[in-house]
Image 1 (cartoon, rainbow, N blue to C red):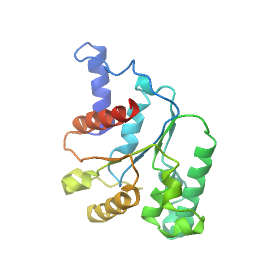
Image 2: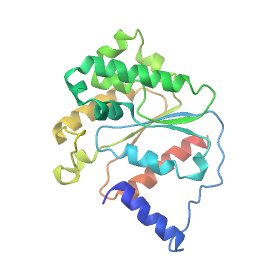
Image 3: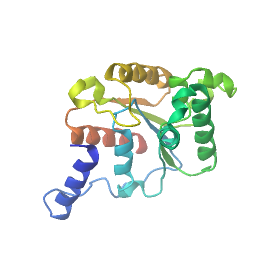
Amino acid sequence: MTYIKLHQQNTRRVQSGLIRPNRYANLTFRMPRRIVITGAPASGKSEFIERLKNEPQFKDFVFLDEIARQLLEQDPTYRERWAEFHHEVYQKQLERENSLEGRSFITDRGTADAFAFHPETAAHWGTTIENEYRRYDEIILLESTARLGEPYYIQDDVRTESAQEVMKLEEATINVWKDHPNFHIVRAEVDAEAKYEKFLKTLLRFLRE
């Protein structure tokens, strides 16, 4: 069962009174906050971000969907132009974030994620990892289901990497972000709902500071 299906199931249970609605709904946070949710393919980040959009305590946040997947869906031949692709990902991500000056946002991957997949992108744009760190207040990396073994890792038209390739990408992503002062990892879990709860608690704990 996917994360989204689990969420839909729990929504019906809330509406029927079988479980309590979100107990964090009335929390307020110091603004603005700039948050990256990152991870290798099949980490659940995009689906978790979709769930956050329906959490009332994040109603004032802008949500940025993943640029890389959008570009690959529009033009699969980007896979044959790897350098150009990641230069484009970085530029478009930068433009989106700069347009939100003064507003809180949660983004599906940040600018530095391009460096994990293509390290030369930093030099191309004349930036450093330290510069990119200053753009964000918190980084949460969700481990991929590839860590759980082949039965839990599902490929699709865009997610074509093998589980072994995904693990290498995850380690590269960790290496890019690990020195950010507010870097957190949420471990892979067979129970998607348990993983989401840990993710949400990690996010809210930071926002309450």
